[in-house]
Length: 396
Image 1 (cartoon, rainbow, N blue to C red):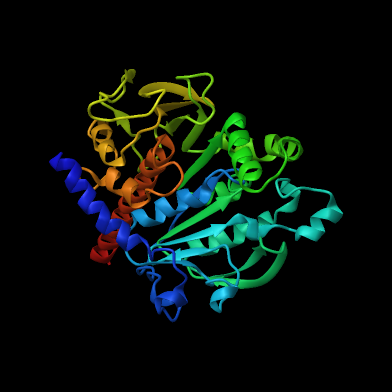
Image 2: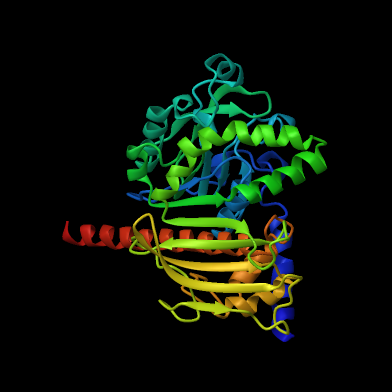
């Protein structure tokens, strides 16, 4: 009980601080982007993180978990949006990270795609040369003028200036298609949402919230499926970390409970996979209901060693959901290689985004573990660069 109250007290402060974390800059009295963004240290090379996923798969929530993990003051949308005296933008910035939406590299606007007859998922509708040039320039510490795809009206708007920060995240439909871009990426992630879960999510959003018919929803999914299968899904082969979201195995009639798997590639530089209880083992665990309460059909965790596209991977799995995020510290205490700074930090991070989708199941947990892995990867690379610079200065 004391531990639960302590975690809760920490989270209240964290959640309070987070309420302004993605507020537009001019609403927070910030005069410019540069006053918040951290300048690169002399000779520092930004790390580049790639995140691939289909539309509506939780990329935005994941990016909030990643950027909040780095701490510091955060500002949110680069331009603030038209309603706040700025411009419409897809770019998120903080003092440590810049998140670039790859939709901004669409070849055509919405009307242009009607003429071409191609969807935005088709690689022919993406400016890969420009994407590569910009990612390389940012990694070299140079600013770029990036185009903007306006999701509100489907137009290509006036480009915006992007200044490199220590962490550059590119997210969207095609981050791993171009081999040149893949070579610039330090760590790659893929959000793999099963067709059944996608359908359930889309029905909930479009039918229950927007009044669309089931027929129109099914038609929309079927229309996208060929291009998704051809251009998006094959990219998971290149991912170092895959978050796989599936229907629960605990009850075949349950359409809302999820089984979530973190598929972690072994042998990746500066990354050590998280494990459950005993590294390298095969484990199935049902947590005590007295320590972690969960609604029907219950909750189970699993840890296994598998092969994924010919690579050795370690898989941590959570099937089911939990009632009280504070009790997640019980699960956290049985995880190793979490890259947390202190006991209870995973639970604290989950509590700080308690209202975000997936915060009561494995989706939020695996995203948080991935966010911590990215932070640790940055810290290791920054430390290595500092040592190299010190050695170079000593030998000069």
